[in-house]
Image (cartoon, rainbow, N blue to C red; front, side, top):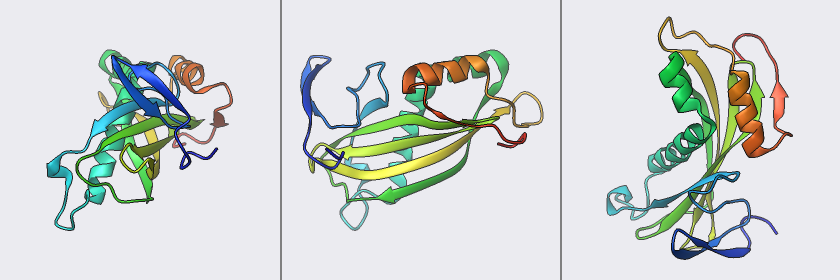
Length: 178
């Protein structure tokens, strides 16, 4: 069934029983896609009474960071000075989010290029039981210790992405900017 359909399973997650929709994994688990639980705070609500569109990007960034941690990219950055930078993002808003709510926000790699990779994220509302946003982001690996030039995604990071998200991640070997 499509991710906007009913919840497909109920799991015990860190002492709490929760519904996990199709296309998400339990928060904190080492499964694809990496999923975090994200509470909606009153401060996220704008004058129109729903969450401001820019807040979704912060939630997605939180899931992306959890993904980077899981695949070892944050440690790679500390050790080598090579780290991620957001080059492009697009988001489709599917439904408004209100306060209070708890969201599930997922992140996974869809494609790997030479120095970049494309990620997909989804935002699920536990209150409305549906996908509220879907996003794609292009991440470029750059050398922060030198001139900020794009560098090849290391094999160890590629292997970690494939181990987490599956061996069928699209490969796009392009020029030095791809």
